[in-house]
Amino acid sequence: MLTTRVKANVIKTAAIHDKDTGSPEVQISILTKRIDELATHLKKHKKDNHSRRGLLAMVADRQTHMNYLKKKNPKRYSSITKKLDLKK
Image (tube, rainbow, N blue to C red; front, side, top):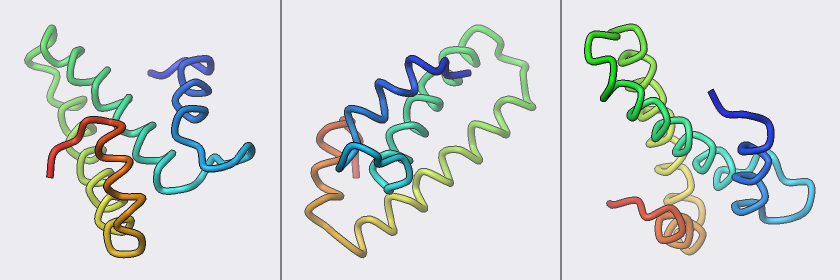
């Protein structure tokens, strides 16, 4: 679970303009942070299959946003993948 302060910092680093909260870059950044936190949770709690299902859903959602951004604006896609250190 992301705290409000952590989420605000993630939004601030990925935002295109001051009031940006819904651009694909911001959504990808938030999902990446949530995926990282849930992955560390699952390393500790290996049998938590309900959270694992949520993790897979978040990964699929992030991939959908990334495919959209890659199709609409490849330059912004490459910059966000470099900024978040995502492969592909």
